[in-house]
Figure (cartoon, helix red, strand yellow):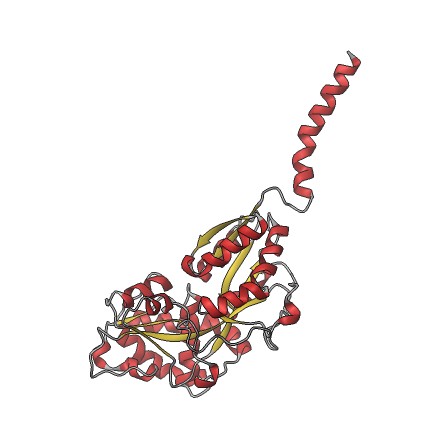
Length: 343
């Protein structure tokens, strides 16, 4: 009987202690990594498939705008669900940096100067640019779109697609690009243009970055404010789509990849970050998926490859002041909303 009591005691103790032991051992209780991302499924799917095949770890994806996803991570902070936020440019993510874990990727020595993780939680993933997407079949012949100034043409009123800069990182990047480009380097001088631009948008706000792309591709709008990779599937499919790098200047910003603080599958999260910033994946992304790498050891894509993006030397690249942008982000968003509400 004593032996039976001891056996029952051991079983009950194991039932009580086992869940704690699993959690305490690196919080790795599932062979999964939960990823929140603003990227389109079509873009990230080849990389996700490669990670799952290489590691046997399943990737669970949730798609939404960067602002929506950071808000969700903030709301879940006491009991995190996500392991990784994959995407989101610095002006949108840095204000929420406290939501993420410090992590130095094994690929950090290969990052281009200026794109290395000096903050702790922010690993650069790719380099992105704001562009205009034009439906050349729908655009009237008398309208030429070479940059932001052309978006003020009166016949474009109500034909410009954009989404909310308060919830979309790509839209906020366009707001910053517009202010700096049209203000000749001084964002405060760009608001006169922004007022005229907002008036020409005519109160039409798309629900997401994908909606902007799809609307222009379908001809519902003639031009859209988007990001460099977004129109490429339509270009590759032979659609009448042109990607315009604004003649007034283009700001390049890195997208990041970030591990959520107290991520439930943190070891898998670290492995995921290291995998997608590795050379093989970055080479695939740069040469086949129309996103620029942040690594310094990737050769340029072949000139004849339609996926190869325009060399930066052929683009009027301008700079923004990240510190100034971060300090004024809420002010600029409020001012944009005030102008929008007045239309």
